[in-house]
Length: 214
Image 1 (cartoon, helix red, strand yellow):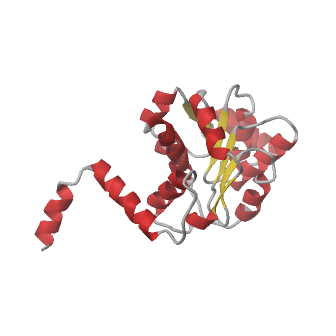
Image 2: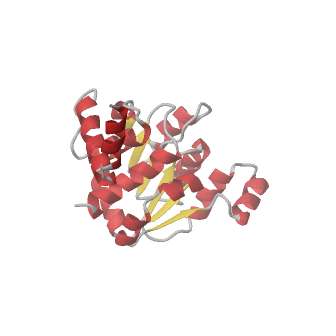
């Protein structure tokens, strides 16, 4: 019996595994989700096996269309970790003419963080403020990035096309997520403590796939 199962798994193509996984997720959702938002919700669950995302993910009005428009216009995607950066699909990124950047390891960001007495994540936001064109900022780790984004947006120094706020943790995480949802910019936020760099990348990929895979 075990041998047959092993053979069956070897013969399943990766695309078929993903499709079957999505079918299982849809069948086990705790409640129906809006079809427009389903690609993001289901991919977040697929990445984490955590069905809490069916309830915790919050979307500003019209955000899916806004995000797609930014991606079709060659958006710059800034992440707060190199892990999230690595998780963003290069093939889809190339098809859309977008680019991805993480400033966390830059020497000038480290110097600015030391000089100003705040985190590299916050200093990275300051550096991203000089980016021209459509901007998507994906935060999967540092609530201080969301707080700094809120400050820069409130001061009129930044206006991202989309903020993805899914940092994970226990200190200022919940508060930072609630704050960014009042900033007046399009957002996708995972309320509560859950999230992570893998989720940030998964959301970006889900948004890109709604364009590149249709």
